[in-house]
Length: 525
Image (cartoon, rainbow, N blue to C red; front, side, top):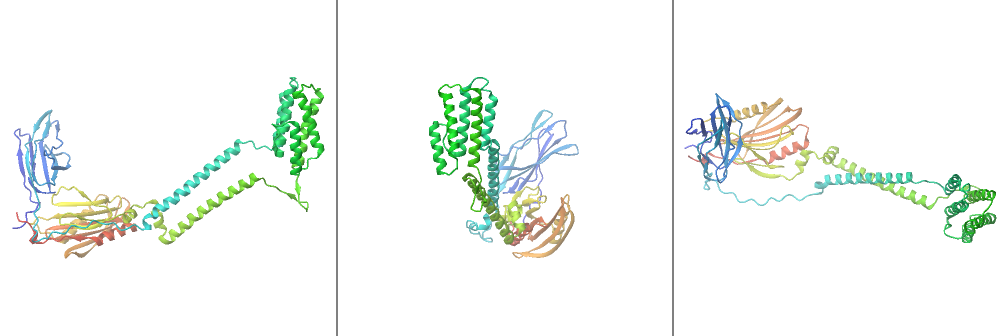
């Protein structure tokens, strides 16, 4: 007796007492993982609200799809696709339907979920597979992180350099870069503007006047002058003049000494000089500053009479720091350039750019791959991502996929069962499959070729071709096998100019392994 396939449909009706609502399922007996179509219908009333389906108390029945309401010949139809992965007998409770603000109940149903019988005398049990061990990582696995690290280092170096430059520029801008002679001249002019003489503030005038002279000598000669007495200042100046060979003659030092002593008389002995004397002291102070400045900063000549240019230690340090920063920056750029050129010459320009930008199919190709079984009879293959099950309205068909046409990469595995009374040739299946691809919305420029293939002694067809969708040129490979009363299909679609996707498709294709089903393996019902 031939196996009863799931395309045979049992229409089971259960009509509630009110005759307004009816409920039906296509079968009440399924095997684990198969699907049930549950339908509630009622007359088209002014207001009808179908329920969110309540499953059994143990929640062993699962709702795969809650389909939209259909209207056919003045009746409303609400369909639900159900399944279960635990064997047993479960009760679907009565469902509440709200019609014109009044609740009506459907009948409850018993659902029988059976296991899949396995004849171990004909099909031996497979041993437990070992734990999959990922291959050891190599330096190639980390090269993209190296590029990101180098880019981060260059970026941070640029940010730090910019911050340092801005701070230095701001500091220079905020500082009043005046020489000692310029500062002293400016202070003398400010003192004149205060009109302290006119206000008879003679002591205050001489205090500021001597501070200006002392401050200039301290900065230009580089000796302490503000916190010492007049005699101590003259002694320090004479010693420094001799040790540093500044060239200040005794007459200038004596002139300074006399000026400071006269000022001390005003500041500490309450002397009252005449106005003419005050103006003479003002001119003397300015002359002392100019004379010392000319002596100290007169150009130094070598033995040939050429001027010797002296650089201060601060200028030397600033130039050294600037040179070091320049060397570090140039070294970093040269290192980055050498690594970039070396990587481009070894891996190729496209590979390096795709690594930096994170090309999606390149990531897939170089990620961890998984070998898994899909559907019944099982299709085994390696993929960079585990394929996810997609719900279908046909309980005899299982679909597993990853990706989409709009993303430019799709891998899909389909297994289905053909009713025993139908005679379907492999050529007819190929024709239908090609027609389904052509009928997809937005597809144009479809071309294909086919060739015979075998896998585990199972005959099949390989379809290769190309088409356009959403402005993209796509290529596809599809393998279709007729395995007794089952169809096994693997479809791979990828962008035409994507070399990584082609490598992925090739690796998936080489890994395909089919589970063979023979007539002797069919269950009798």
